[in-house]
Amino acid sequence: MNDPDQAPATTPPAQRYSDLALDPRLLRAVADMGYETLTPIQQQAIPMVLSGRDMMGAAQTGTGKTAAFALPILQSLLPLASSSVSPARHPVRALILAPTRELADQVFANVHAYARHTPLRSACVFGGMDMAPQTAALRQGVEVLVATPGRLLDHLEARTVQLSQVQFVVLDEADRMLDIGFLPDLQRILAYLPAQRTTLLFSATFSPEIRRLAQSYLRDPVTVEVARPNATAATVEQILYKVPEELKHAALLQVLRQHDLRQTIVFVNSRLGAGRLSRMLQRDGLKAQAMHGDKSQAERLATLDAFKRSEVEVLVATDVAARGLDIAELPGVINYDVPFNAEDYVHRIGRTGRAGASGLAITLACERDGRGLGDIEKLIKRKLEARELEVEAPRRLPRAPRESGVAATTPRPGTARKPAQDPWFDKPYEADPNAAPAWEQQPAGTGARGSAGNIRSRRKVAALLGGKPAAKEAAK
Image 1 (spheres, rainbow, N blue to C red):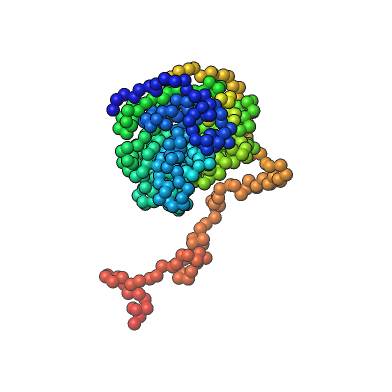
Image 2 (image 1 turned 90 degrees about the vertical axis):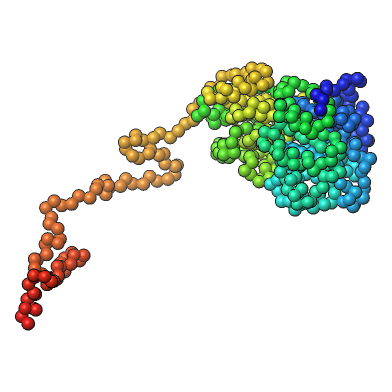
């Protein structure tokens, strides 16, 4: 395979959707969604996909990559569209693979909206949900299938889907799929596809692993790169607060108040930390919910819907929410934990400042995060703006001295304090030194039981060898 070439710029790119040679039904759907002007990635990618070229695309998150490949794919499939109810007339002709369930659901929602005025059918399959409804949708026939790799393999093994007529394959967020170990699954899935197809690969970075993947499965691809890889949007203001680890929770509450963030996503690095922080914020009176991989897909979708309806003020999430969440006019995001991977920082703050809107990205860092911050600044090629934050230490109940052995507590209002216990009951047992044991008070020589009921008298037994017989036996 030859090295990817840069997209040729022979004619000025179109500026509006109406300038593209798209079907009126697609243009009507785009107008229904309120879109008029093309983004840079759409200006360059749509003509390339319509021409049938394999493509490697790179652009900032939130710049309309989904429309950049969805609209030309739907345009190419329209001549094969059928209004027949027969599933055989609706084979899978386009396959879109996404790394996370949320991203797959978001892409499916956009594809479904673009194709609403056409006979083309679409479906979405991902893990964490029952396979039965997905199987029923696949058996009815779909032209565009959006899927996560793991669940698609489940359907392939169950023989509920056929990919022999696929003409377009899209690997969305390919770098993320490689990061979470989907490369073996991708290789198995691509083996099911026809050799003659158009393959589109979208990635935030063109790492050596991504280039090897492109070299194996793309044919002479053209590269569409509208911005420097890993560049952050200019509309997002990035602020860094350095606070001690033990004051992070108090700093988070103070930042939410100072910047008046009534709706925000707070990113943490672990699922356990997400659940713990959301419970702490709930005790502080905030409407907070956690979103992470340990929750079922139904719970994650319900939480996301509640957040989009502003029923949840603070969404505490792991990096499962760093990609694929398209929330209109999200005012800001907060990195409660500095991400382990510097590239995840770009995707986290990409949830705000989308579609040209302004946004705020705040990072809370402690001393141990110095290396992670250095990696982020090296990646984005800019210095994060550090600001001072005076954080008040949280008030704690006073503790009693350790030698007392009793922790000081503050009684609740309206509760009566228990009377102090008589110290005599706390004294250890002390025996009377002048008292004789009960067994010594028993008269000697008596065989009857003494005052101590658990002590028996000695029984006289004649000796077998050399002993004197008992008195009763001797009398005989």
